[in-house]
Length: 356
Image (cartoon, rainbow, N blue to C red; front, side, top):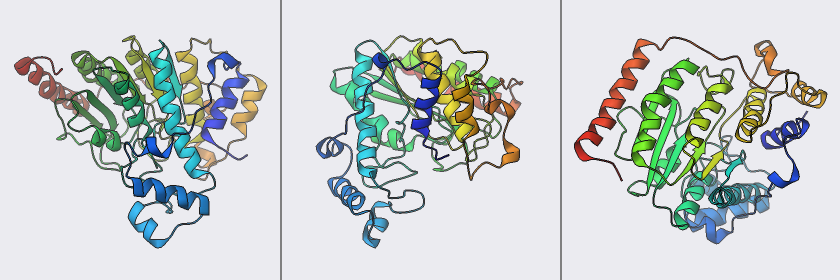
């Protein structure tokens, strides 16, 4: 079957009876004027023109980095990318009304002001943050649990005292930013080694992310929950179950603040779709069925992927939502890294007081 991540997430949630009409909103398209708040006018114009033509010039490819294997041009690209931004801004507005808003099409965290990067054309998480700031909120926390560092969002708010950024990602992986040495008063980077487990991830949340969040005392939160940190994703070597990501998001939601939860990367259809459908389930308080309905089973059985070999399929990817937890001891090198980062960040607080 043809596979689109967001369409499949929606289809799986509908098969489970989790999408009554009152919880759904249609994402509006962000206007070019809105997009130009963060993206250079020549880039916005060039992407729109190339999308309408269905082709790119050599100058556009070299200057703006689209029309490549990494950032392809396809029919409706500009409208889709602009709607992703509009959806994230709408999610922030809904969150301000007292809701946790989930926008799985969002999470294009690599988008740069003047070019496309990593399948990201515009930077919708940054626009969600702007929507909160425009509403007058003093401090917004951005947390990125994608397997790849949230470089575009970090760079968009460098020097802005109203925004703090956190990223837990696999070290030595593209875009090769967010290293151990890249720390700041309002920037926490937690590069983790290959094969990180649920237990090690929980330790990072407990020892670093939650204390950092509490110290910053945000008034709203934006989360990019990429599914490429899961076991079985072809573009990372992390070993998380989807339960680990759900738990991380729920820990942040427990701060009881206006919160936007976005999607992000995810290149294994079985793990990605189940993760985001299950995330909607836990966010909305749904009861997980012991046995998936036939429509859901048919959907999962119909996925295909050139990036995942048939003999790599885990049986539970086809018949349940929740992965088995990946429980382990915390490796010494991971424990040492977490302790070192804690000493850097919280020694600064002891010396200088709260960061806001």
